[in-house]
Image (cartoon, rainbow, N blue to C red):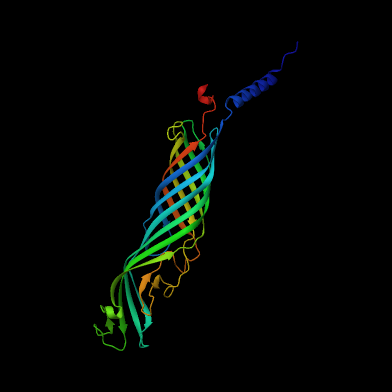
Length: 302
């Protein structure tokens, strides 16, 4: 009777072991309907000089499909995002050549302080993520979001002091300066101006790290709690008619010059460029349809 060679026996034994583990550790596939809600810090950032980007808040609500196969997670869906942000522009002064009602030239002197721009942006996006989950149910997801801003609004506020300097009069300083004359539009006033932002595409990269909790612990769903980071670009600036390409805008409805500030997202040197958007915070995901499909005989069970 012939015996199997030792090398062949080793190969058969190895094949058997591989087959055994392949069947024993075959990943379970779980399909789920996913709902997520997230919120946290948000900031819209550009490289404009003398502007401090203070940030605001962002919240997302999304629906989608979640697939877990063994230690792999794939998630795709759509979400709605609403984000706020605030920026402060350093105090500045501007001299603008002007013509009086008598047709004589003079210099308009304007000091702008307490300059704030508050942005509100709404968008929709398609999000796709891929990641891994450990045996302790700690997971990490990486992905991207492509969306479109369907709503954009900016409200600028400032306190502006207006004066005038004339060549043909002596003025209060001997050099033709006039100030604190409300009937001539000279004095200090608080101004606010609303700006519509352009509706443009947006693109984000997204990272999510969290933990999946016990089955059906909330609303008969499996919850995931995570921290997230979204970094991307979007276009918000919209071409506007301003004075000399600056941020100063005449908001008068008459012939009188009434200076205010346009949105800080308008900049002739940056118009058409992308603006960085940054968000991070907490995300709660609920999974329905997630159920155990028998005991997984994983490596730690042997």
